[in-house]
Length: 411
Ligand SMILES: C[S@@+](CC[C@H](N)C(=O)[O-])C[C@H]1O[C@@H](n2cnc3c(N)ncnc32)[C@H](O)[C@@H]1O
Ligand code: SF4
Image 1 (cartoon, helix red, strand yellow):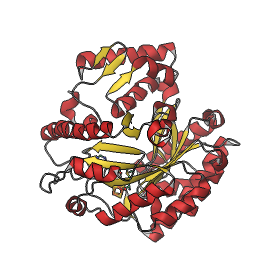
Image 2 (tube, rainbow, N blue to C red):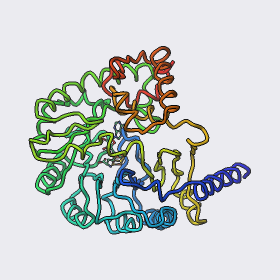
Image 3 (cartoon, rainbow, N blue to C red):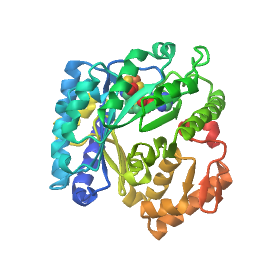
């Protein structure tokens, strides 16, 4: 009981801090993203680290009620300002009508002046109709989760989608006129057993001319089926996956794709699409966004926080007119911002151009000093990072995603 009271007090304090001390109006500029986390899926895939819960109509209606309240609170905080960059993820946002999930965002988003608007989708029979409705919101990019085309792995991981359905959705996307990309995951435990061939599979997907490909090496976290491997093995396994994924990078490079953050995008001269639709540093998605929905995180120049994950608790605070903020870091008081920022950057990239990074992040002299100290610390004590000609390189990995969680890596 005392714990509940303590938590409630903390959450109220955080909300009042935000309401009274933060000027959301100035925070909402042309670069900041609004991130929406839709917390339901029709099935829970074993490998996934994001799943929250299986879709249930009643639960979803309750979520939507709370979600609308959260939108209302933010609309009061941002006053006359509107977001121009949006990312809708989850979960599986295309499980429900865009009118229910995207429509209410009209209070926060300027749909007529969209800069970037990304929607994540799961391959479903109604994809074509779904994409048609999205047009009225000026969505700029669709990101579809494919993960693999291997039917045995799909079945083993509980994806509940057939290869034929995935191929028909790829065809729909190809003909849709949208800029779109595909998520693929490498390093399923069962992929050797089921003879997954990275190259054949990738070439089959590339025939549909995706604009971008996200090749994710498998991340092991407590809530997925890759976590039970002994930690040491897990690290070696991750390294092996990264080595194997290099084949994928080579195929992509040959097909005219370029790496921008964690996404491989086609060259502009291939389909006239703009490279800026990838997650480059300019989007600010990783370093400047406000998140709504259960478990959504927020990261801005001044603070970082995460919403409560539990949908019931999330709704409980919103019913009281309070934002359901769980973990909170006030950068103004703690001065932790530059360190958090580079930590995030390291998660998504193996090479960082330090000078460009400092410039893009618009850091003060004092903050630059902190970053320099942090890099020196990394170089000497932790990862043996290399700093050469202003480029910070993490040796032996292409992606450091996932390694963060493994103790051996840090000690
Ligand atoms: C938030 S999920 C949404 C995807 C969508 N629901 C689907 O399954 O089609 C975004 C992406 O994260 C990636 N992902 C999920 N679990 C992962 C893991 N354990 N390791 C690496 N990537 C993962 C998948 O590629 C997935 O498409
Ligand atoms: S991979 Fe997609 S569909 Fe599967 S559990 Fe994760 S978010 Fe849901």
